[in-house]
Image 1: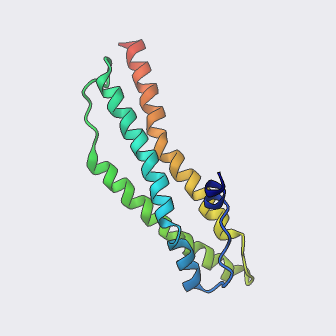
Image 2: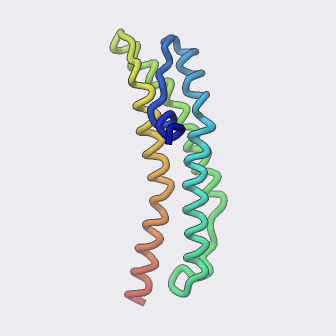
Length: 133
């Protein structure tokens, strides 16, 4: 549990230069990718299971190109974290120590939720297909 607490509530970058903020964010990219990737594996596994069940999704292919594009876009949007933190600090004209950890935490939770969301939609589509077929 302490690892999860450290992931979700990291210490902020104490030196507040744009370069240090960039290093702070990049030091957490692997953890972000592992969490979002694990959620992606759950979603793909779930869709694979649904495609083997009788019903409207039987034999439906999983678009791998869409998965790759999603992964790239997730990393591109992650890259904006340090820019947003740096810009807000400059705009406010003061150090914003808690902003980076809060942006990271909320972005991580949002990204994992967004990655798992297709599984919920797939379930609803499968149920609707069974009920209305």
